[in-house]
Amino acid sequence: MRGGVGRGFAGFLALLTTTLLWGSSFPAIKVVVGFVGEYGYVGLRSVIAVLGLLPYVVVFHWRRGFERGLVFGGLVIGVTYAVGLWLQGWGMRFTLASNAAFITGLSVVFVHVYSGLVGRSYSGLLASSLLSALAGLYFLTNPSVRGVNVGDLLVLAAAFAWAAYIVLVDRYSRYDPVVLVFYSMLPATLYLAPFTISGGVFDVDGIVSALPLLVYLALACSDVATILQVYGQRFIRVEVAAIIFLLEPVFASILSYIFLSETMSSVQILGASLILLAIVLATLEDIRKHRVN
View 1 (cartoon, rainbow, N blue to C red):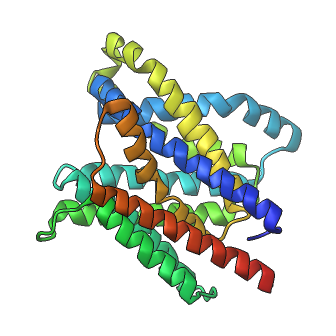
View 2: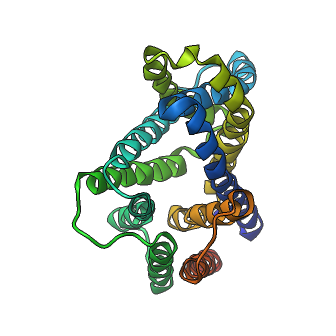
C-alpha cells in the first residue's frame, strides 16, 4: 500500500465503493438500453457526466491554468475506455453474454502480465490471488466451452483496452481526480453521433423515460465511481486494484437478484466466494509489501 496503511485502507474502501457503483449500473443499464439503445445510452450518459463536472473544471482551469499532462492523461484514459466499450459491444453481437463477461474479466491477467514485464515484484501470494480470482470469475460467469469465434476475439481485444485503462489510471492518479475524470469522459461522448444520425434524439419519450436512470449512471456510476477509482489507485497497487474490480460482477449479480429477481446458483455463489478470497490474499500481499518496505 502506498502512503501508509491508513491511506491504503482509504484507497481500498474507495475502490470497493467504485466497484459497488459499477455493479449497481447493470440493472439500470438493462432498462436504459431498452429505451435509447446502445449508442444513446453511452453517448447520453457520457454527456451528462461531462456536464456534471464542468463547473468544477472551469474554476480549476481559471485558477491554475491548463496542465498539459493532466489533460493529455485524461484524454488517453478516455480513449482506452471508449475503445473498450466499442469492442465489447461489437463482440457481444457474436458471442454469449457469459463468455463476454468471463473474457472481459481476463483484463486482470493482462494487468498482472504488465507488472511482470515492467519488473515489479511478484509474489506467490499474489499469484495465488490471481488464480483464485480467475477460478471465481469462471464459476460466476459460467462461460460456454466451445470454439473461439470472432466475437470472443473482439471482447478479448476489449479486455486489453480495459487493462490499459486500469494501468493508465494508475499512472496519472497523482493529478486532480475530478479534472482527470472530466477529460476521460470526453471521448465517449462521440457515441452520441450515431445515436443522433439514426434519429434517436427525436425519440423524446424514450429519452425522458430513461433520464432518471441516465442521471444516476452518469453522476454516480461514471463521475463519482471514477473519481474514487483515481483516488483509490493512488494508494493501491495496480495488480491488487485489478483484482478488486472483479467484484463488479459479484455486486451486479447480488443487485440483479434484489432488483430484477435474477437468481444466483450455488456454483455462482462459489465463484463469488473465490473472488472474495482473491481480494483478501491480494490485500494481505499489499500490506506485507508495505511492512517490508
